[in-house]
Image (cartoon, rainbow, N blue to C red; front, side):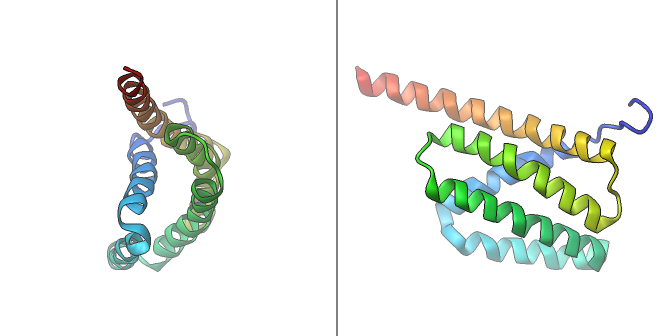
Length: 139
C-alpha cells in the first residue's frame, strides 16, 4: 500500500480467529486446544515446521494472556474481548513474525492493526447485544 507498509487483509481474518477462539473456549472449554493442535499439525504439513513453531508459540503466549484476562477480570464480555485483543494481538503478531522470519516494524504494525479491526467489530457486536439484553431485562 505505502512502500514497506503493506496491508494484508488476511490479518483481519486472523483477528477474528483470535476472538472466535475465545468464544469457542467459553463453549467447549479446553477441548478447543485439540482443534488448535490439529491446526498446528496441518500447518507443519502445508507450510513447514518453522511456520508451525512460530504459530504455536504465538498462540501459546497470546492464549495465556487471554486466559488470564477472561479468568481474573469481571468486565463485561465485550470489554474482555476488546482488551484481550488489545493485549494479545501485539504479542501474537510480534512472536509469530519473529519466529517466521518476517519481522519488520511495518509488518508488525499492520498485522496488529488488521487484527484489531476484527476484534473491534466483534466487540461492538457483542456490546450491542449486551445493551439490548440489558434493555429487555429492565422492562
